[in-house]
Image: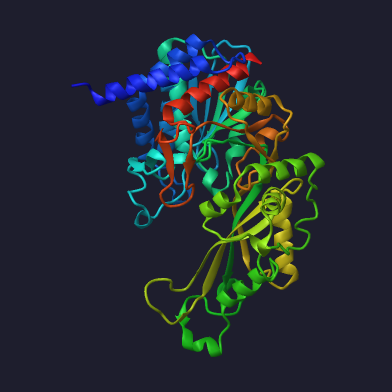
Length: 504
């Protein structure tokens, strides 16, 4: 009887090899190289997937101080195993980063960014334990890894490492040199990643790079791809109202019957929060918050219109679980707002008793967890200062503002070699990518696109994943849709991309 794993490996290798041979040539690589890499990826499929599952089972969660320094140490091992000549843990004022180099003797050098930390997860909300690395057959999607970190970002990152293993196993020379930087605090706003990037030897290595990219599952369920030309910046903070700081209200929780004669820090926080936004909560009202916003260019407006035309509003609403956008605006206006407007969002509110049933207390402290997304030419430092001034002006200077992390927006030109190369690789595979002016989310790309590096930076990758920061996050391993690449196909895509970058 035929071994089912061996049979699957043979079929996958044949399919990927055929795709490599059929792919239009754009100086990516010889068909023989791609066929050999595809065959190796199929052969080592189970080993590569297990490497990802083992990584999932070692979570590093900065907000919980969990998995440090083990997360950084494990990443160093992953990089050395994949062929990097040098890899080391980089201490910071917070969680450690990682720096590595792979000298392939190539003409060109490319930077690679990883994050090894993940968001928190409540097991009660998941169909499988979030850190077990379980493979689940998702109807209509395919065999998927359902786990915290599956798509954000360990899945795509492990897929990229699988591509490097394939180069190593087949004796193929890597077409570019790599400079690697990684962090363990992305999920709390990258408060110390600048210490990694700006360390003298790391900065010197990055200055030799032509661009920086982040492995990413860029395909949507129908196989299409979006290329993000930038991302919003972010500020993560807590606003804390307390009787102790205010000088009114109790210093600790007391019986709620005394509300008749004692001030409430919880209500004070609610009133302060209400001044930050319009009555409907949709427009930031912080004094001067949007003064430095750079208007969209004619090109960016055209790209927003094209994005709205070429993507599905219905699919977007379904994925978010909503029936309409704010003020019932059009899809194009929703796209435009996501790329060009700053936000003030309440992530969570905590005060007093929040367990089952009631508990009649007057809380001595109330906390709001806030994130603020910012756009060019706003900065995190200026926006934070304006928030503090806004509160003080209205008599809320006693409310503590504790920023945990954050950074500025990032932008890369559509005319940069990085973006043009990404588009060329997708098009060579029959995909006409949609250009997105700015990711509504954030990543610390400003450290690469801003001074002193001023490099193009962005995301690249085939494959499908979803549910970042949510229960049942997943990354497709074996796709049910032939237009969407599974793990092996996405790994081959990274090889194609590296060849294209090296051959420019």
